[in-house]
Length: 238
Image 1: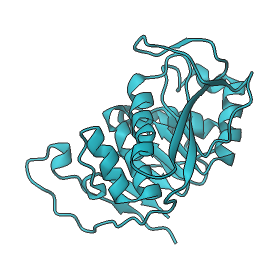
Image 2 (image 1 turned 180 degrees about the horizontal axis):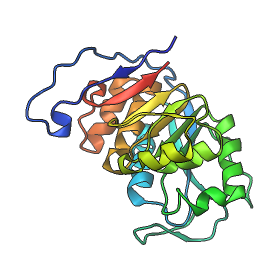
Image 3 (image 1 turned 90 degrees about the vertical axis):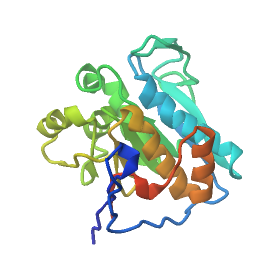
Image 4 (image 1 turned 180 degrees about the vertical axis):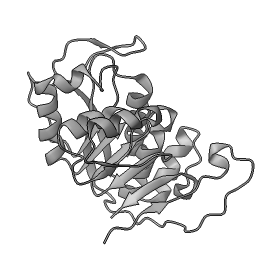
């Protein structure tokens, strides 16, 4: 049975008045005390916000819970790459050259060419497919969803992407069920998000799911984010 929850936003999105919520969501921690390896796929043209927002959230878990999420970056090689905004990054691992730790959480941020030439890179798509199939959770930010869809990881799941790219996403992958006007969609082990400044949302949600509300609130507080899962608009598919 599939159950979808759309949690209506109130003041968190700057509405003129608080929206009365139809249903509050209670999430029980599923992995208290466990440690996870989170791999961030980075390539030339990756966007700063889609990379650093979830990276910050996951890295801060080590200060708020036993275990926590160990973060690292993965690229085709360990050569220095450049983000869309011009930052120089040195990847921790190259999937074409190195032995990579087990990946429990695969994060695919958006990059400048996520909707075109990156989709033609067979080595990149193969890595995404193989890593995603073995991971406990797969998360995309913004147009990272296009790479997940190309790798077949979204087939049979519901998803979302950057708001103005939803039309193109539907045109390229007409078999998919795509949500609009949500921060993120959680369908089984797949979490896809709108990206941009909302890239913090799905990461904090996953922390809440794994370690509970107290840890999520603690991580949020450290980044000056008042986390309450019921203040965000998203879809849960089960």
